[in-house]
Image (cartoon, rainbow, N blue to C red; front, side, top):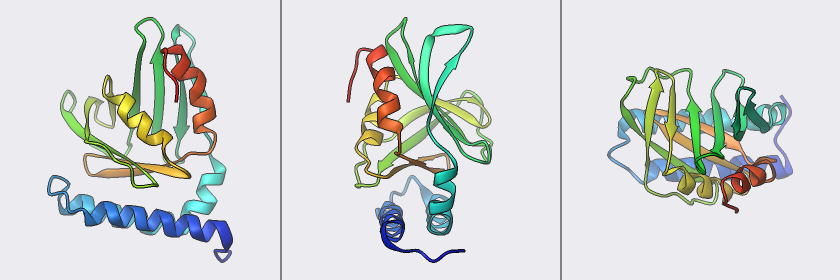
Length: 186
């Protein structure tokens, strides 16, 4: 491994501080397992972030049989993904979070927290479990997406004891047409 220098080192320190401050808030609803998960994600991110983030990127997303749906997606190497989409026919923006490590109860509701690297965080949004490893946030998603847009380098999402980090690179530029399709903007 190459040593950390310059911007990468600063980015990693910021990432570590943000996640540790997330832990330090002591949100009782998260419990000890969430705090351990955040510590683990922080440790792994400090080692892997400069290498893993450069291998993936945000990309436009669509479904051929559903032209009214447009969006953007980021997929991690393990299949974890975040898809932000707009249903043009309903002017509804939402997102789908896939966490392959999860085993959530289908039909249940799980709190989803989104936090920007600048510390911006709002109240948790209700995530509706579609299947054991996938949930969606509907109307409340606009607040989470706004939080994502306030990030400088990355934002983190936590749901049901699992946490993921998503880079901001290209996110805002690709999201602009999606937001416009739903009559919104940054």
